[in-house]
Every structure is written in structure tokens, then in C-alpha cells.
Length: 323
Image (cartoon, rainbow, N blue to C red; front, side, top):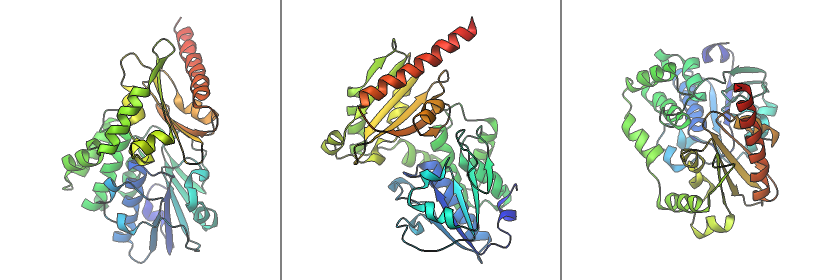
């Protein structure tokens, strides 16, 4: 199966779902698929089922029609899961995946274990949105669909600065621009513009940061108390790990923040020599070689120390391989 049109043959209802705490690629890919089905297959009942999305993405067509209650009791003919490496990260939407007559997964996470009936998995793709572009086909990408895909591309590539950006990614971006999207505005308002709360919590995270392993690793921790003091929500923490990563001399960055239940969300970023996906998997999470995460319980400092040991092991192993 190499296009959505083939997948949708004979289908009467579709649920589209993505991972918990949806980011730009998750939102963009899900809404692109939603708008594609609404536009070209109006006879099909389709719904996007996601946790509440960040306000910066609400300009996208269909964002106001996202279902976030998970209260509906319905069995769908097809459940399309996007930008999600395992069913456990679907949150409340998992019940639609488990009861659907057929499931299909589109993803680029290297940790994905092909958990759907059919899977379209390409770990070297820049984003799930890039894969959605392939499945839709250039000729059926409308301006509204292009906006969704472009949001996914820029958020998972850091506006084309990360190493997962390929020549193919740039060609797709060019095609999307030709659809008439206001790409400078999309970049500025969804990627660079920060609220006062975001800037304050970023400042606190940088103040709290420390170097480990002879300056090869940087880590920081934000507690629930600090979030409350700065009127920050989890969605305001997006980008902190990436900002830590660009510290001179650093090979890997670790960011932990406390969740309401006392567990800690771990986000890791790498500059290339460290495979943070392998570390995340060992912690029960997943992701990409250069960007991954997990949720852990216990002392955040102890977790940082254990992660640093694994980073050091990888760096020492790489050094040995070069000898």
C-alpha cells in the first residue's frame, strides 16, 4: 500500500489518532490526512481524535473539529495512527485503535514496532508529515493540506536545521510553498514566537542547568512548583531540550520536568554521537536517534546520573571504534 486512496477503498468511517501531548508533526500530519479525506472522499465519515492541541496550531483547517473527549463509543472501519511508535502512547484514543476493523500506522520513529495491521514506516524520513505528503500525492495537496504538512515539516526539522532534513524534504517544502501558503508567517508564529510564560520557564531551565561528563552532557530539571511559580504549562516547555543541545561542546542534552502525578517526563537531544533513542527505549520510551523521550519515576538527579553513564558508555565505545 503506497497511497491513502487505495487504503480508503470500501471504507465508511475513519478515526485518525496521534500520540499524547501532540506536537507540530503530530497535529500537522493528522489534520493533513483529515482534510484530504474530507476534500476528496466526502462520503467517508472521518474524525481526528487527539488530546488538546497547542493554540499555535489552531489556525489549521479542521483544528476546531478535533475531538479531545474520548467519550464517543464508536467502532470505526479504519483507524489511522500517525506519528506514534506504540499503542500505549495513544492515550484515550487507544480504544478506537483496539476496536477498529482495520488499523494503519504512518510513522518515522525508529522505535516503532509495526503495531498496526498495516504499517508505513520510514525512520529516515524527516517527519510523519513528509510521509503523509507521499501517501496523499502532490496533485491532491490543497493549500489547506499544504499548511498542515508544512507545520509538521518545520517542527520536526527545526525549520530545516536538523540532520533529518534531506534534499527530498526540501523539495517537498518547495512544492508546499507553491501551493500558496504563507510560509514565513507559519514559521514565525508556530516555531519562533514565544509567550512570556515560555520565555520565563526557559530562563529558569537554563539557570538550573549543569554540565556533566567533562562538559559533554548538559541537563536541567523543572519541578511542578517552578512551573506554578512561572505560570507555565507542559506545552510551554517545548523547545527547552533543543535549546540545551546547542550549548558549545555538548554532545547530548537531558531535560526533565515533573508531571502532576509526580512522574518525570524526560526529553533528550543529541548532536550525533549519542543515540538517545536507545536510552529512551531502555527507560520505556522511544523516539529518534537524535531526539527521544520517556517517562520515569524516582529522583530526577539519579535519573540524570544513570542516563549520563549510558551516554558516557556510548561515547567511550565510539572512541574505541575509531582506534
